[in-house]
Image 1: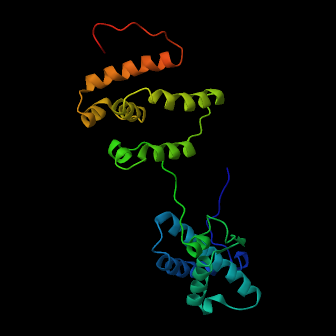
Image 2 (image 1 turned 180 degrees about the vertical axis):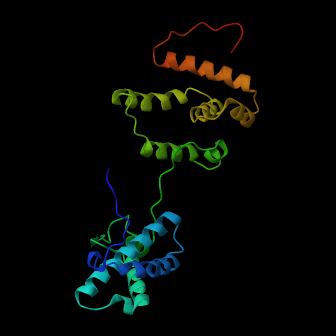
Length: 226
């Protein structure tokens, strides 16, 4: 059995920088005020950077036989300013680094995460001219298809637009809406049809696509159109 001692370490066992623990809350409170305008994640990162910068300054001052506890407010202010200037403990980021806060502030831009999904509502997709083309461009940038062989991807990107040109304008927009993942009932409401009729059209377009690809022979027309 291992017995752990709960006795506090003697003064001889203390680290020479243990007195920074009394300064750390002061630095953290000041940093939270300075960086209160940032989002939660960025604020926590900036506060941690400020505390690290304060500890680095604390070590440097002790090495010069100066007492950092004599001016805690100045230490907290200096640490926050150092983080705002883009300087980090262990180095500084390049002003050309797009992830650097300093570069973003200097050049007036910000970095945001890409959308988790490229799906767009039908109204947003067709409310503006070239809305579909813009959506296609976005999906082209975000899609990383590792399932389909590249030759098949190329063939589809060439054949599918050509196939859409064989449809009427209304059918083309309906087919694109369904391809985007919109439900049949939503597409039906947009075009004044029933959901059943949209399902019938989708089945017909599927057969036409197979014929267009040469995977199915053209069937003779039936007496009852689908």
